Image (tube, rainbow, N blue to C red; front, side):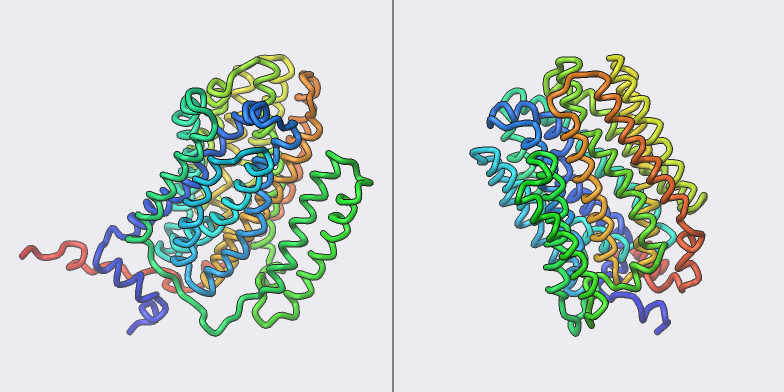
Amino acid sequence: MSDEEATTRPNLRERVARRPDYRRLVLFVTLFGAASGSYPVTVLSASLPRIADDLGATDDTIAWVIAAPLLAFAVATPIAGKIGDLYGHRRIYLISFAAGTTLAFATALAWDITSLILLRMVAQAAMAAAGPSAMAMIIATYPRRERSRVLGIWAGVIALSPALGVVTGGPLIEWLGWRILFLVQGCIVLLALLAALATVPETETRPGTRFDLPGATSLGIGVGSLLIGVNRGIAWGWSHSTVLIALVVAPLGLTLFARIQTRSAHPLLPPALLRRSAFTMPMSAQAVMQSGYMGAMVMAPFLLERRWGFRPTIIGLVMLPRPLSLARAARLGGVHDPQRGARRVAVSGILVFTVAMVIAGIGAERRWLPMFILGAALAGAGSGYIRATVANAVTRAAGDENLGIAGGSLNMLQQIGAALGITVLTALMGDSISGDRFLALHLVAAGMGLIAAGLASRIGREGESEGESESESESELPAPSPEQRDPPQP
């Protein structure tokens, strides 16, 4: 047996041998699953003003319909990713979708703003495993040379799913109300679960490795307290007792997490990864940019309602160019990544986003709708262009044995950045209808883009080439033989 065959997971090798198109089938099924999770994001954002009126919620409270699930996602994804690394990503993926189906239907029954936020948060926590587990199964199935392209398709589909939600969900919400969105999502998630049962492969397990429960607990406490403290500090004031407690607990929890990781025999997040700039720098750059991107996206429906008087369906359609351009740019970035290198692709995409925020801000201030739409579309393009590059750089730096924790860590930092951006920008927006205020907020988002570009410029050459000298057979499946590609006819 060759070294290549020795390092290949038998489950995957046998499946590819039986079906030469198995890789594409896994990609299709996991992409459908990812789309089912991101389907309601844009149209739900566009419907926030209507939901606030229906449930009697204030603007800063209704923002938690988006921000709280991001918080849950931020805490749950690295934990779920690590569990998948230890016990196999197939079973974690299936459990996640089974729970997600039930909770999506339950969300449609929310009776007030508190229940809506809590159900959305628990549902997203249940679905948290799907992202890192799906990414791990795709990367384990595809050879290294094809991963950038495949990750670009992955990011593009995730972006197109909310666009489909706008086209189909917007009219449904106008006709039947916002609850129908979660009923539709529950049906789609159920279909994704049934497709996955028959398709997705199991990955390597580590039966002799224990899960780092103290590390997971301290990380959840630290990250959760940080985000709660920031959000409630703006809403209630920084001297409020709950805010003070959260801001004290946050650094204590994160410090305890760091100490546990250095002493644990089986750390949740190996300290060696955190010392690797090829692992941390791409994530940090994307997290900072995501803060400005998501803050501006959640602010957009309020802006469009207050500055132009649009209804939810029109708001959703006006926001449609953002995910469409993100999807197109994501695929382009996946092609450019191996050609131009991680640093150039990341810096270019982030600078496009930065310019876009200035354009969108001027359009909002002047009430020039085409200019605002152009800025929003360019923001989506800049964000999408770097997705595959960042994911590929992070997972390559982590190595195939840590694909789940790499994907989970990437998602965690993205969601922390998104939650902070949403919290800060919506709090600064308040009830304002001023064009000057909206221009200033978009300039704040552009400033976040400049900071992100500075971080991206520090992505070292080792981040672009690390792992290239390793045997590519380490993660590739053997190519099918000529007989397998063209089996003899009986």
